[in-house]
Image (tube, one colour):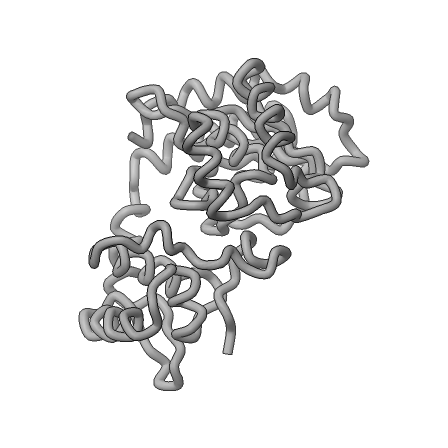
Length: 267
């Protein structure tokens, strides 16, 4: 039986659950729905409960209700996955969605201009979720895929989001999640991360220099909502041994233009 497979878990051994998010009954149900619908389903009760940060007894009760109402399905052997109602809801949101069309159109222009894989990711709880991915003429063969969740502290998109937090928020978040390494280049101490985020704020973009995946170097520029808060970023991914860091930096203005075109689109 498959466990919950997310990029956040694949190299760190798990995020230790999401107890910070499992507050009231609505929070718990939504967290469980998200965990059970993650790629790699069906997922066992214990995996879903741990990922959602909900005690197993409560999780079992809520999951059974979600199965009864059609939002999840059960394989009869203790595994859960997305049900017809959540699939229908996803289809209604994405089919003909103006925001999705705008995001994809802007990424396609950027991808053609720089010739590499470009993505949009947004913060969802304690991770980044990739919403759109467009491959340019020279696409990167990385492990990312739409819907995948990736860490905040090891990705360029995540650093853009973290740079928008105040120090108390950053300290609380890192105390809860830790700073587990993804590669030998990952930032794993808060002092180093603070210094990195200060650079992100000063320069208006973030880099992932093989910190999340060896051989892959990324540049990201923040996407802001209507109130000016960073909710995610536009990201460019390159193969480290094919494109230099300097070449990646030469695309900052192009990526910034795309991020600016998406200002306020997602909230």
